[in-house]
Length: 106
Image (cartoon, rainbow, N blue to C red; front, side, top):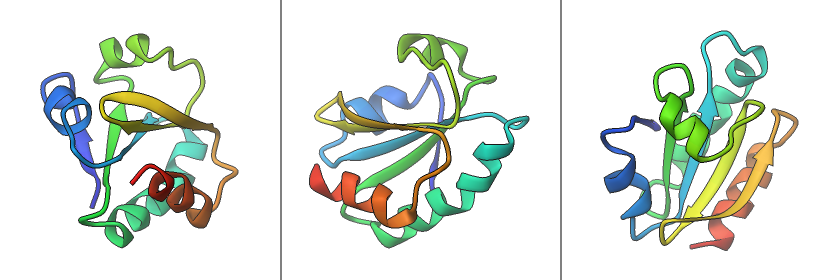
């Protein structure tokens, strides 16, 4: 299961993580976000122990959305050592593509 990321835990779970982290910026009202949600959860399960996966609800964590220039969602950001290394915008992506990008950072 993916982590629920907030302003309070983003630093510890993402920035300070010693593993690569996939962050899914999404919102309740976003249709494509709901489509990709189960895929994100599958990636989290498949890569448990190798990488971390979390979700940021942009309506609940506006500061994070602003900080990372989230203009359209879903937005997948791939973090390594606290820095954004890669990104995918939109929901037209496969589980394999997401896993490959994440494992490339491991």
